[in-house]
Image (cartoon, rainbow over all chains, first blue to last red):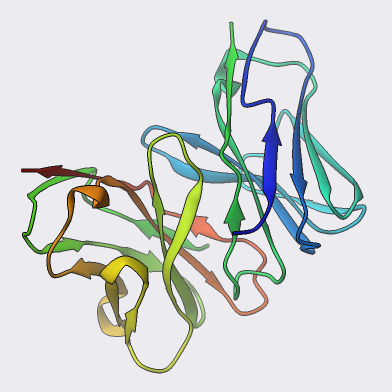
Length: 113
Length: 113
């Protein structure tokens, strides 16, 4: 399977603090995505990238920003974390838009207290 | 707007019994349809996908799905489930040139001996 890793795997933080989650892929995939997974909501797209420095918003982008300075890295930043951002965050990557399969990381469990 | 409905939140079946997981979609053009599986604590893995052609598609682990355009459905089936099939299953919809994949809320499958 594709090499896609997320760090950290678990994080506990306090309301109002900034948080950055990292996604790293070794497959030279063009597309990268950040999703959040919440009970009753499934996976919802936060932001995605279609190339270095090229990003766009998903359906739940408020309170989040992203950056992609290299093909292999896609960072998700919560500028000022809130309790509503407690969730499991998944990164995914793929070579093409949705006509190819996505490869998912193992997730980051984020708790905002 | 594109959307996916998985009407069953949780399904329990006996080992060796047949399985059908329901998925209904809404998409304004020809859909690309996917089923992903998520084992506990893991990311998602692609089971199968439909782009065009034969409406019955085969996937990994003995799963198959049938695309029915008239019913806007893409139900997942397996003739005989194994204890290792216990997981959460997600249906997703996208399309040609569409960079965003929309997931359903998932169906959790429990297998009883």
